Image (cartoon, rainbow, N blue to C red; front, side):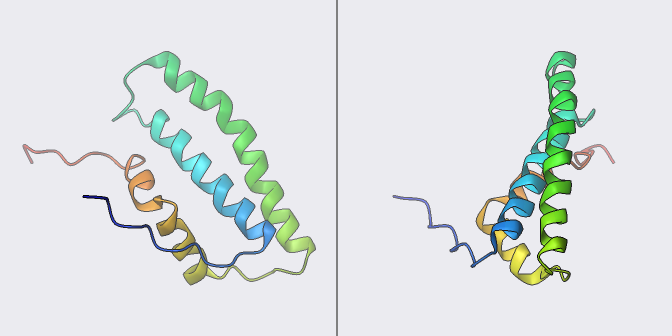
Length: 102
């Protein structure tokens, strides 16, 4: 049995696509940095080093949107893109895991 097809990616401008991609890359790195989930200090260090570059990409995507007059963030459309790109699972790694004893 095949897993269900992910929802289709909505139409995005190039800048919006870069924004979503850089955001998810940043979230992935933050998940690797999360002290409640990190397994090795070296892996967290590498993620921290890479985070700088992804933050620049995120800034550049937003700058491009602004320069092109894309001053509004269409949250509903971008949320659909995030869901299509497995954003819900990816952002879970940034949170503190549930304490089963609490």
